[in-house]
Image (cartoon, rainbow, N blue to C red; front, side, top):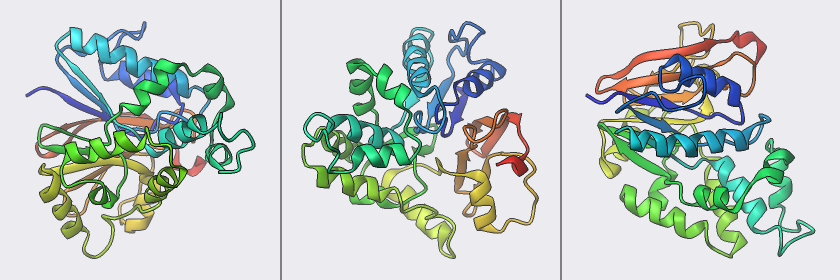
Amino acid sequence: MTPLWVVGDVHGAYDSLHSLLLMAGLIDHDSTWRGGPSHLVFLGDYLDRGPRGMDVIRLVRTLEGQALNAGGQVTALIGNHEVMFLAAQHFRARDPGDSLGFLDYWRSNGGQSSDAAQVQITDLDWLRARPAMAHADGWLLMHADSAFYRRLGRSVDAVNRSVLSLLHNEDPKIWSSFLNHFADRLAFTYHDAATVASNLLSTYGGSHLVHGHTPVYVLHDELMLETEMTEPQPITYAGGLCVAMDSGMAYRDGAGFIARLDDQGVAQTVSLGGDLGDF
C-alpha cells in the first residue's frame, strides 16, 4: 500500500514543516523529494500567522513536480486563509480604500505583509486551482471540520467545480458568503457527531475523513477527553470516523506533527513535540 502522509495547517511555519518532512523521510536537507511513491497531502492554510507563508507555498509547489517525477504524489487543498488572501488580492485594485473589508479581514486573521509583497501571478493561479476536497486510499480529505461542503455540491468533483468558479467570481458577496461558511466548525463533536460524519462520507465517499482547521488542543477541550494531551497529536474521534490534523505549529516554535494514515486510521505520527502550556 502506498504510504499516505497528511499535514494539517502550516500557517507560515516553514522551518517546522521542513523539519517534519525531513524527519518523515519525504525530503532531504536540500528540500528535494525523497518520498518515492508516497502520497503527501496538505490540508490547506499555508499562509498567515507565521512569517514564511509564501516559502511554504513555493515548497509545496516544488514538491508537487518532484513527487510526480518520482512516481509519488502531492495533493494540496485550499483552506480558508488562502481564500482570505485571494479575496484581499483580488479586490485590491477595484477597492483601494478597502470599503469591502477583505484586506482588513485578512490582516486581522494573521495576514502577513511579506506574503503580499512576495506573491507572484503564478502563485495566485496555483492557489485558485486548489481543490477543496479529495480522496486518497479510502480517506475523504478536507480542510474544515464542517458539513458546509454539502451546500457547494453533492460530489467531490461538484464541490471543487463550485469553489473554482467562486474564486474567479467578481461578486464580493459570493466571496463573503464562502468565507463565512468556515466559521461553521466542530461539526463532528456534537451528540450526533458520528451520524453527521457518516452522512458526509455517504455523500462524498470514503470510510474515514481527515481535516484541519480547528487546532487539536481546542478540539481536545471541546470533546472533554479524559486523556491528557501534553503535546499536540492527531485526534481520532466521532466513533473513529474523523481524524483532526491541525497541530498548531504556527503558535509555538517546536510544535507540529505529520501523520501517516492507513485504512484503520493513524498508523504513525512524526512530531516535533511542544508543550501545550505555551500555547
